[in-house]
Amino acid sequence: MDTLDTGATAWMLTSASLVLLMTPGLALFYGGMSRTKSVLNMMMMSFGVIAVVAVVYPLWGYSMSYGPTDIGGIFANPFEWFGLRGSFDGAAVDGYGVPGWVGVAFQMTFAIITVALISGSLAERVRFSTWLVFVLLWVTFSYFPMAHMVWGGGFLSADGPIASLTGVAPIDFAGGTVVHINAGIAGLVLALIIGKRPGFGKEPMRPHNLPFVMMGAALLFFGWFGFNAGSAFTADDLAGLAWVNTTVATGAAVLGWMLVERLRDGHATSLGAASGVVAGLVAVTPAAGSIDPIGAVVLGLIAGALCAAAVSLKFRFGYDDSLDVVGVHLVGGLTGTVLIGFLSTETGLFYGGGAGQLLTQILIALCALVFSGVITAVLGLALRATMGWRISPEDEVRGIDLAEHSETAYDNPTASARLA
Image (tube, rainbow, N blue to C red; front, side):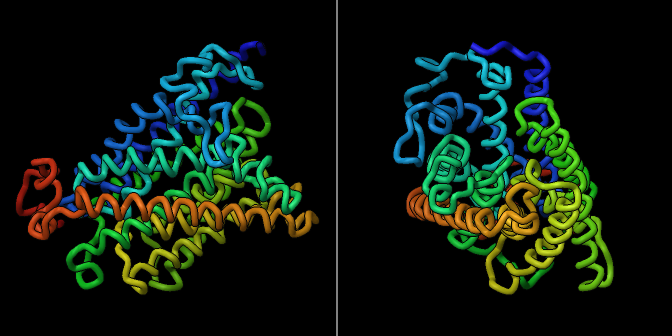
């Protein structure tokens, strides 16, 4: 058994705590973007994810993602480490000197935030009970297999057929495919299955509290250092590089987003700045350990500009992605994953590495899109036919907070009506 490294262990426990903080931060971010009559439900969707995934992850999630028995390159045996018992030795120390329990804690927080991201595409119109059942099913059939395929030695890993075909191992440092493409395409599929809110595209549906949005973005930014720098799995130079690249790319993405707003609309907005923060964080997630700061600037500027342009596509194509999960997480995740093929300092096209890495990144992105899209479609359609997704039209107009939770966020009915 390797020797325990208390410094690495402390860093990974800190990183896990930072990533867990991201989900309440997301609740605040999404809650601020919602209308007054929907803010509590939006925040409850994130807290509901924490509750469900925290229970199922130690039961079968960790075993299904990282267990020793691979099943078809898609997932590991969910029963081998069921409940983190049997052959799982919680006291085991990995190659970085970190106990196995700490690895479980860190990976659990990734599962939680990934599912919570999807909720932004469904704001203000779905039954809370159906959402919780979807969380249970989706994390089991989409997230856990994707984590295994990319990080657990499965189909999309360095040991998989894509790497054998191209001769270059895929790069996904902290979750471009596993987290953002996975959640982003799920958000798009569900938005299409569930349908639009009344008045979508015809009446304004403005964020009710922009300070909430900016504070939520700040908490996401803070927590993301656990997400990216923590993915080095120890406190070393790679963690430092990931930290610097995360900050640089995020700053560049904010500038790119605000530039698009300025040219398109004549002004830069606080909502745009907060969204640019998230776009930059999303795009640098898969690349944080494989690019240099110059590449981080390029990646961030491109991602910020593309995501700023992409959020308006829902009006052109008529899908109600309420809080821009598709425009930010899907587009940002695809951008970061593919740009690694150009910007990786060891294998990227711009650094003399040839086209192999670019081809590899495109292929893993496409595989993630297809896998998550199909799984989400099956689950979404099955739940629509059984439990049903939508609250009643009357409740949608009256407000989902009152209908689903028998609560309202604000006591002043005049202000509530004005802000709704």
